[in-house]
Length: 324
Image (cartoon, rainbow, N blue to C red; front, side, top):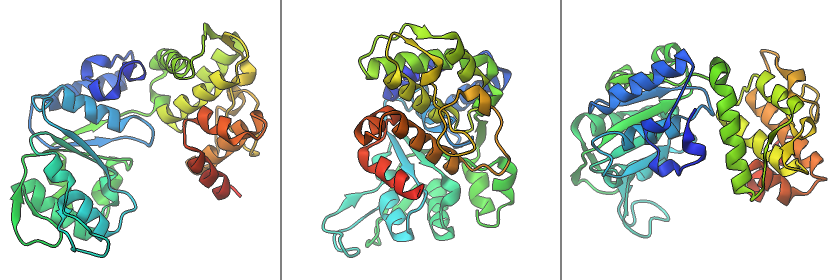
């Protein structure tokens, strides 16, 4: 398990991770080896497995821990915005650039730059990243002056390694440059020995966040959580447990408070009934069904539903619109 549920993620180190599962033990062994080097790191793992937490823990456990940790998500940005975000821009470099801005590479000087979903970068952005990683130099958008930054790069993607390497979309020279060491985070379904401890940590965190006193789980609730396959991994576990705490009337979470999506949309039956999903069931459809389930269970109160799901009211509204 990880005690990131208990302590602040900004102070998380590899010493905060514990596991009883071989797959996670191999992941942590590689992460500890990575801390002893300056090699760039590539973290592989499904969505929701905790890649950002692991990247932060690697930074905090490395000689660069006194330097900055700068996180950046590369998904769904235009080349201009991505260029500006990573390398900064000068005033007037593009419409709306009203002042000079330092990019992520400059901000991470002396520390670690974490680029999440790096496989979603365009070829043009990949070429610029390659130069910055190889030579430690870059240009702000709208400037020809070369700047330097001493940055340790940690990248992440949800793509499996074979698909990542064979992709025509991603430059092979950049792949070999960012994958000095590859760390693979196993999905939650491959960590059965850790699940009970992770559920306990999630319940403690949810109870503290919601200012509730929760003594534990009823037999049916525990069986439901432990039987479920968790396609959304730790992120889904966190949301489901927060919803369960919000729905619980007493100090013990009973089976009726465990809301997990079924195959027919809104369904509040126990998770054990849905331990298996069709191969074509997308994570998006599972998430949308869960949002509708929680909203229905809370009587349509969007404010309470957003709080239980740990998202903003506007995010909840977007997910509801997308589900129609």
